[in-house]
Structures are given as structure tokens and as C-alpha cells.
Image (cartoon, rainbow, N blue to C red; front, side, top):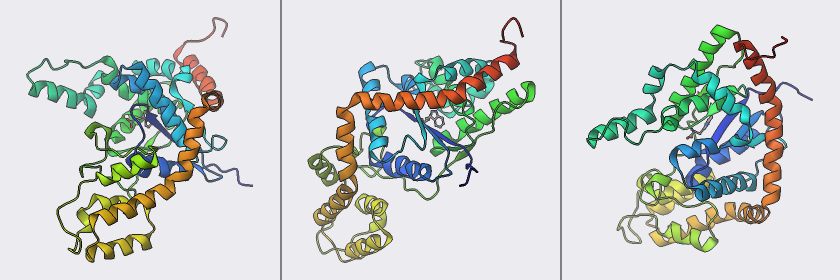
Length: 339
Ligand code: TRP
């Protein structure tokens, strides 16, 4: 038996919105595959405190946590192999967040893309620079650093927009380590080059903010309907179509084997009708999602087992976070009177 674990992989999923095909292809599927190996060491968590930055609707935040937890489990995430938890169940993260805040230069946060974008939008609108900017939005890279450093995350799979945050976490860790000794592993962002960024119904990147998504676990009927709504051009049956610019083909390719992709390419050249291409796309996607969809519905109907899984995950996570926080606190001078 091998006991050489791979580098620790850690990533968070902000609990806003309903998971869609783009999340599945771009993040969920590769993360579950990577977590399945015997020597894998993955920490995956519901970033529900992060959700509060963008969303103040308690019902939506709760519903999204339930849906996201059920989605990952339904798609085969094995909670016995990974540490799967909810951020808000691990209070040590928040405590560490404050400690790190006191070691984070405000100037570093001024440079964060998300904050800068908000300021630029305000400037363009003639508003005060910091209009509607909360401290949560401003300092959220520190919370993300706490998420990562708390568990010794080394490889951090993220989208491109998050690379800067991982670099900031590394910066913060280095400053802290330099002053207090080696407490934190230095994280590195991992951006998958080979996974597709799916296009949505309108041909732009599939994203909740564009309202162009295809939800993962709608009913079969709704899935078919969504796929039928994918924007195409006016080319008639029999006219050759360009797979490279087609969302239908792009999604097909993300779900198909290489060989299936090649034959669809040929069908496009031969002028397959859009209706027919969409019908085949529905079949392909639906086959892959049918079993997980059933499990998803079962999980949603059994909230107490979902909750139990998350509690067990939190307990596993806290076996790591409690001792590390204690060590960190001791190093900064927060320790029993007697020691
Ligand atoms: N901010 C990340 C996002 O929006 C989610 C996230 C929160 C995260 N904490 C993290 C990702 C820690 C990686 C590591 O996508």
C-alpha cells in the first residue's frame, strides 16, 4: 500500500446559483475525477461565507448550498475519499481570517481585480468610488487566503479570475511565515488548460451572470427545451455548417468521445439540420446525466443524510484546523496564562 499522498488539492465553491453544464464540464467533473485516486488528497468545500459577498437573500443562499452539495455527491464525489465540508461549519477559518487580516497590507487589497472593477464601474457611473462596496467585497481575498492556508492547500484549482487571489494567499502566507516561523504551506493556482469553457444559450460564456445557462439537473423535458433554445444561425438543412463557431457542437464535444466528435464534425459538413443536431445533443447529455439526476432527486429528498455528510466532513476538516489554529495563536502570543 502506498502512503505517499499527492500534494493537497483544495478548492471552494461559492454557494450562489444553481449548478449548470458549464460548472459541470469546467470544474465539477475534473475535480471529482482528480479526487478519486487512492493517493489523492482533496479538500472541497461549500464557500457559504463567500456567498454573502454577492447575495443577501437567505433563502437563495440556503437553497444554493443544498443544491450544490447534492450535485457534487450525485455526480460521484466520495466523502470517504475527500474532505467535503461547509465553510461556515469550521469556525477556525474565520478566526484565522482575522489574524491574516492583521498581516495583509491594505494596498494589496486595493489591487484586487474584483474591487478594482467595482471602483471602475462607479467612476464610469459618476458615483463615489466606493459606492456599494462592502468590506466583505474589499477584503475577500483574505478570507480566501484563510480557506486555503487553514488546510495547507498546495494546489488550488481555480478559474482564471481567481489566480490573483491565490497569489495573494501565497503572499500573505510568506509574510506570516517570515515573521512567526513556518506555519503555512505556499499555495499555487492550478488552471486547467484542457477543459472546455462552455458557451451558453446565447453563445457567450455560460454563466449565471449572463442568464444563459443550462441547469444540470432540470427535468428531462426542461433539458430538452433548454438545448432547443441554443442560438444557431439561419442555415438550412443540407447546407454545411461550421462546427468551430457552433455552441451546439461545442457542448457536443465536451460530452462526447473523440470519435463521436469526429462523426458530428462530418455531419456538420454534410449539412445536418439544426433540429437534428440538437436532438442528438440532448440524447448525449441526457444519457450522461440520467443516473446522477436520479441520485440528485433522492439526495434532495433526504436532507438529514446530506446534513450528516456535511457534519462528518466538518469534523474531518476540524481535525486539521483546530491544531493549526492553536499553533498559530500560540505563535502570535494568544496562549494560556500558564505557558
Ligand atoms: N472565490 C472562489 C470563486 O469565486 C471560491 C473560493 C472561495 C475558493 N474560497 C476558495 C476557491 C479557496 C479556491 C480556494 O470561485
